[in-house]
Amino acid sequence: MWDKAKAWFRYSVTILWARLVALAGALMAAGLNLLDDQTIRDAIQTALQPQYIPYYVIVMGLITELARRRTAGN
Image (cartoon, rainbow, N blue to C red; front, top):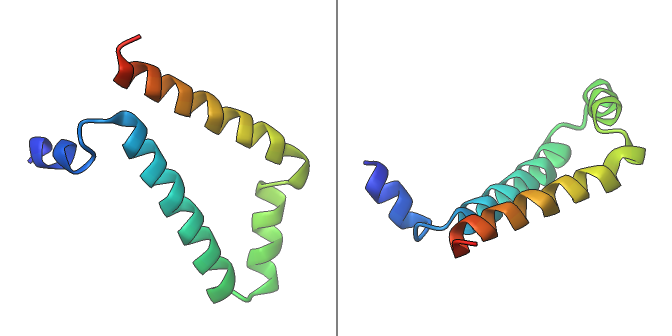
C-alpha cells in the first residue's frame, strides 16, 4: 500500500508537499465560500492573523527547500 502511495507522488517529497499546499488552499477557498457564518470567519481570522502571513510563507518556503534537497540528495 505504501509503495502505491509513494508512486502516486513519484517518490518525491517535493511533489507531496506541493499537492498538500494546493489541497489546503482549495479547502480553505471552498470553506470560506461554504461557511458564510460570521462567527466562524472571526475564529479563522483570529487564528490566522494577517500580520503573521509573511511568516507562514517563509515557513512554507523552508519546508519546500528541505523537501527538494532531500529528494535531490543534497
